Length: 467
Image (cartoon, rainbow, N blue to C red):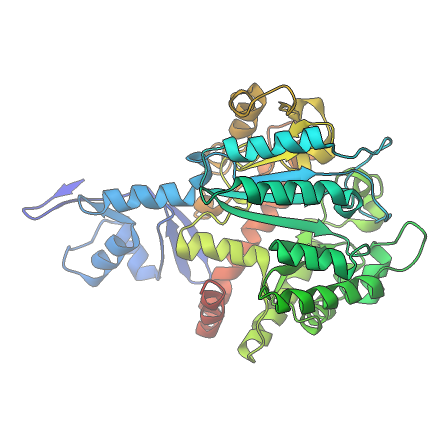
């Protein structure tokens, strides 16, 4: 701590990451700056005159703090870790475990399919509106949620009736798209329900990964459903409420550019290149459809480089996880991506409700189905009881990145998934350096800074995704 006649200031504890010929320095507040070698030496040796440009830059960046900046740094920390200061915002309603498809990588195993009842759905609504969070997102999942259409309508209509403006309410549906007729699409558009289609890319990839139970190819059916949905939603003034989600299998690794181009052909401006999780059926046949973190990242790099070049040519498309990381780095905001929170958002930012009322802390936890991840039952336990359960505290402790990888400058933006760690190691305690997800996240953060240093136009593209 240094004190002058004008001010008291200090260099906050920071971590370092070498990127090309620069040094990324960051701290737990999410403050960061990129220094060249001379600047870094001056920082390390505390050779910082208060009137120098470097001092002023580091003060503005939050690497240096003074009496005037402490309050804003605390507010930045609260914003970056908003899930620690609010109740649950994402409520996943698994309205059925039935499905009409047999996807290669299905992450759930259900020998006795179940449908959510009115009784359970009513309790889901109570949970949503009992939480002390101004934001609430209800997300319908399955199985294939459209197989329990009446419960989707019940929750949608009653949530919008109950909400008298006290919450920013969003409702969304994740679907395979094969059961969407125009009547259902119009209903969902009328009620402003966002739709996310599972769509893995060109016919050669999608039909390989996702097969209708009868053995029929799904690609043409889903592509038609996407087109009809976009048309109807545009008529309702909702052009940005239709999204696509891509799950990457070994088959997908061969065609990164074709997958991106397929999304563009459908008019999509966003793609989520989601790595496969070793859960459910995917775990049983991992050798056939899975891959290493390194193999996924080679694919992701090709896809991202293609996306950047397309953006420079005026085509708008962004990669979702990259946009999440950019939001954390440049806006210092928590975009709600559970796996990149520390501690993770499982049980705090998100809850998943099964058809029988069982409560799980996240999507992955309900797919694993272990009793150790079960937080209670919505028919018997109230929200506050669930939040104070030992399982929630265990998940928080097991995913606190400060305990596992505290020497990296990427720390303010990293998270880990205790559920996937358990599935991989049979323990909640992560082997963080061996974690495939950790390798992916750290590589993706490094990629962003790498590309920014290579070409200033890349930074312009990245920042345009946050506009």
